[in-house]
Length: 279
Image (cartoon, rainbow, N blue to C red):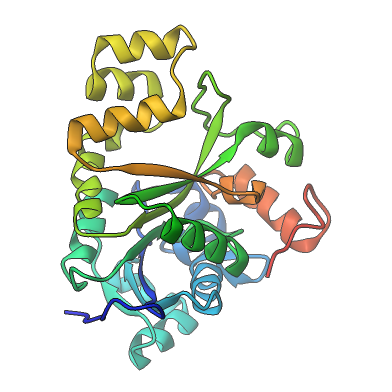
């Protein structure tokens, strides 16, 4: 059990989900790696980029990774070194992201605030982490979720397809950044398990979780972000607030080969958002 005392200098404990969703992940296949998380992106394994962003943020004290599978770790010597030294705590992944997240939470003291993210967040930076966690601490909620405005993502990455939740107050893209600020906030993971299979089909997610009136509101373009999160609170008793990030690259993860090429172009300074902070 990781023990943390809550005070003004309290750091978050980070959980990084680092296992593949499928047995034949396209990034792993393209790069010849055993797991997407250790695939090199512009010369550095994705998971190392994420770990570096967390460590240099100044707001994360302990890092737990769920995955990659144990057999894949030797293929990433830097990750192997960090695990061996205790710099990173490795846990085996379970058969879904939400179950892996729940497993990670059982190893963290109940009083510690938690950041949850993913290993395929290859454009994550220390500035993004600091902004998200700093705003989360001021939110006064049980949990927060990082989002970016779709219009910002579309402007920064013209023509690039992203998953969009289209709401009355504008489309938003998720950022794979979640903060659980107290024990009640951690209950969001149980809620997530119900919604996990529907993340790419938001209309079905809204219908099955919230009921027909809310899905009708969504389909008619009348659902706002606040109404959606209020519905979560009504269902779960968990107050969740959004943290809007001024970093469009926070809405980009690496699910497809096209995503990998986009991220590499950004990191190399030759593609969209070439002037964005990438370190």
